[in-house]
Length: 222
Image (cartoon, rainbow, N blue to C red; front, side, top):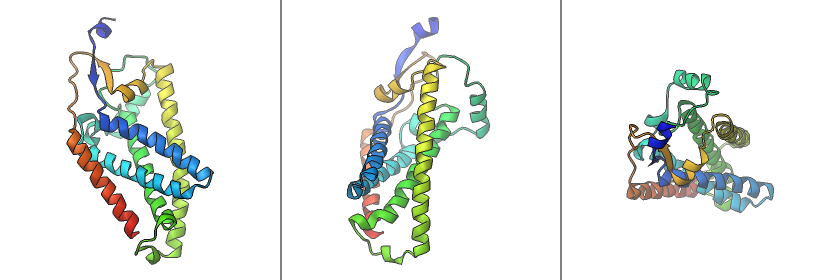
């Protein structure tokens, strides 16, 4: 109780990370709905937006704030397994960023999102536009990419479901709220835990613009 009384609320998840997180939630849901009702023009544009967000997050993983950087939360597989061995232990949440296992979930989700959006751009781009490189793709490669797109979508939904299950588990079993910090950005941490360094807003805007230009180039030439 004394530790709780001495804790203070620290900004852990900076705005770019939170915006990316909730934008991806909205975009994945919109992609599913647009596919189910066969609004493929919208589906393509949603894919462009999702790919832009993923490219931005990859760049932000190297150039963003301390908690967003891959170097700060990618632990060894041994550390991830050690974390999972004690996952049933109820304890206060003193983790500044992602825990050892959660970091690998982030990498998995980003990898699946990247493959899904890139493969979707390659097979659906002719719905919105057809680039000069479109006709150079062999039929067997196009079929393989289409199969990858379908398989990756199923894997993405499965990983998202596992991610949601983990959030519910931490809330119900460990009594740790992982959702509110991703909304407000702040967590209660003891005084001895230093606040993480943040990335700059201007840097985030520049990286987002670079990501959007890269997607526009891919959409134009593929």
